[in-house]
Image (cartoon, rainbow, N blue to C red; front, side, top):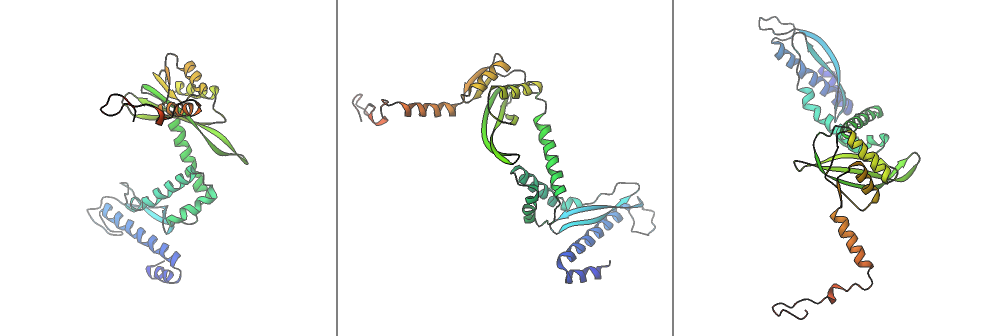
Length: 281
């Protein structure tokens, strides 16, 4: 198809025509790049030739105008380098990031297409979405199973409850989180797992996994007043101390004060008048 046909297609079918126009343009850009890197135009003879052409490979490129099928040229003596895919890779990165964010937010595969359409990319396949989600699962698994090779002084341990889909129904499940403080003062997420409930056995299992990854000893475990965490920490990290976090200490103090029937109001407590040394304000 020559340039004249592409222009006519653009005038009759704008969407398809713009794809053909961009495809022609980018293929032409790569032809020019090959000529520069080979040192000689196509079908020309020159003593300055550095490489010979060696056919092409079909490669797809996702853009806001849809997916394009380009012909990436090859060189025999040297690798062919093109800025075409580097220039348009931002669309691919934005596409992958949008899919990952949708996956994290719990958007179903069939509804991801509605999210991606705002990027100008239409008709994305469900298999591509699943592929990106599977790659994300692998990276998360590698992160959560990595070796702990630095000494951890303190562990911050907590759990939050969320409604999650389990088969055909929604149930409450606990998200167990362990954050460690390293010797350099930086905090690091060490473990995140979902459990049916928060009790001593689940925490012992989580702490056991941390020990297998290299966490042999900690100085202090900090959490709320959940007894399961306390007993699990005592069993799995003997010699370490346990402390209730300041937030829960304040919350418990406020609740305790509110439950005291004879506790005096702050407005009834005598105070020392300014400058007098006695009396009340």
